[in-house]
Every structure is written in C-alpha cells, then in structure tokens.
Length: 117
Picture 1 (cartoon, rainbow, N blue to C red):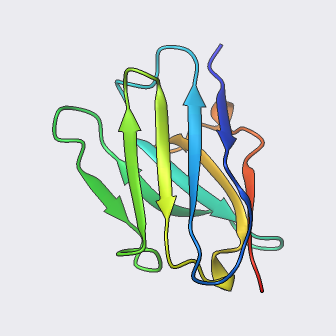
Picture 2 (cartoon, rainbow, N blue to C red):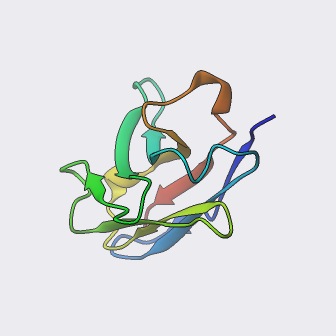
C-alpha cells in the first residue's frame, strides 16, 4: 500500500524559509510526476508545484509561488522536497504531496505551514 508522509511545516515569520519533505513508500515514486498542493480552510485544495519523472526532472510552478519555491526529488530516498523562501502570510496552509494528477488514495495528513509575525 502506498503512503505519502509530509513533514517540515511550522511557524515562520514573513520573509522566512522552510523546507518540506514528502516520503513515499511503495513503487509509485520514480515513475510518476510528483506535486505539492495546499489548502486553507474553506477553500479548495490548490496545486503549488510539480516535478516530472525522468532524467530531466523538469519543474512547473503556480504563479503565486514562482521564483520563491523550489521543488526537487531524490529518487534514491523516495522523497520529494519543497524549499520555500520569502514566505508570505498568504502561503499559510496545510501542504500535501501527491502524484500529478492527484490520486485520491494517496492523500496524507499534510503538514501545516503558518506564516505570521
């Protein structure tokens, strides 16, 4: 059974940085594009960033995080990361990882990121 476990969230001041990690069990990791999503109360979950499989590991970002966030992956560790810099209060959310497109079976508990002074 596949499990995705997110970690690394916390409370940070505006302008600060955090690095999120998503550890994957099972065989999905290296074969699929992986993505980060986020959700705030009362809003739909939104896509944040994607990293594709293959040697190029090309990336794509939502316009709201482009040039501030960096997604990466380590296939040897079955882990995908999200480096978040220059954080803003509007980045406050629960962050999740999943495949792209997301598979409903793989949603984990997420990790809370709170950006506040």
